[in-house]
Structures are given as structure tokens and as C-alpha cells.
Amino acid sequence: MRALLLAALLGLAACGATQPTAETPRTVESVDVSRYLGLWHEVARLPQRFQDSASLRCEEVTAEYAPLGAGRISVVNSCVNALDPARPTRVARGEAYVVEGSNNTRLRVSFFWPFHGDYWVLGLDPDYRWALVGAPSRRSLWLLSRTPSLPPAELERALAIARAQGFDLAPLVLSGR
Figure 1 (cartoon, rainbow, N blue to C red):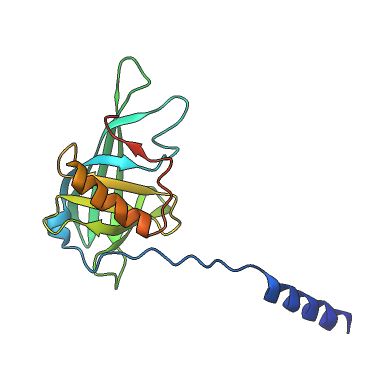
Figure 2 (cartoon, rainbow, N blue to C red):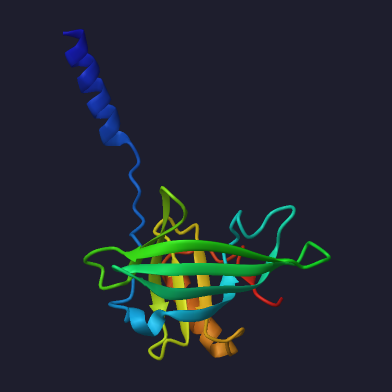
């Protein structure tokens, strides 16, 4: 009887618990992977511990994607550590795969097996000049461009997508600034 009463009390407590109301970010409709492959420059990002710390500030960030076969994509990220006077280049190599049924808009990326992160394409220029990518948690966000910078109107267009998706852009790091 006590177990039944305890279960009923826990059930009532769960009914009053606050449930998240934020919608999951929406991805673009589809991505042509062959057009997406190649070199991208980071234009902006939300701070990440692997790019921003007491001893590391990544600048001149690039991401290069290449086909590996069997539906896998090579990922090579590089940056210059602006906090080190020698400005060494740091390189991280990983692998990604497209999440089935996502029209190539959601990927899982790993730089250290067996750990994977979400890589969702949230905004994409029709000519693949820039891409806005992030995670459903809204803690990760990158604005990538085929060139090291974007014209102000294009930058604002991409960031407006992030704002509309509920990303907090207050801590945004803009490249080259």
C-alpha cells in the first residue's frame, strides 16, 4: 500500500513539474552535400571551451569537409591560437555522417570516438556562400562562409535566423574583431 501511495504522490509531483517549452530549432529543408563540401571560414561563433579558454583563443578558423565514402565525411578544423605569441596552428580531425531521414540537414560529428555532437544546418545561402550551423541545445552555433568575412547585410541575415530560432547571441564571437 505504501508503495502505491508513494507512486501516486510521485505521479502527482510529475504532473506539476515544469516541462521545457522551447521548440527544437528548425533546419533548412535540404542540403546538397556535394555543394557543401570544401573549405569554409568561421565568421562568428558562440564561445566553445575547445575554441575559447584561458590559454586558447581561436582565430582564422576554418573547417574543411571532404567525402570519405560510405556516407561519411572528413572534417578538418583548424585555427590559430591568438593567445600564444608564436601563433601556432591547431588542427582537429574528425568524421561526420548524415542522420538518416534528415535530407542531409542533420549530421553527427566525432573528433574522439565514441563521442558525437550534433551539427544541424539551420540557415544556408541559396548559392552556398554561407551556412549557419548549430546544435538543438542552442549552446553551439557557428556562422561559416566561403570567404573570411561576409558583407554586413549577409551577416545580419544569417544572425537573424539564429535569433528567430531562439539562440542567445549576446556572447557571440565575431571573427576578426
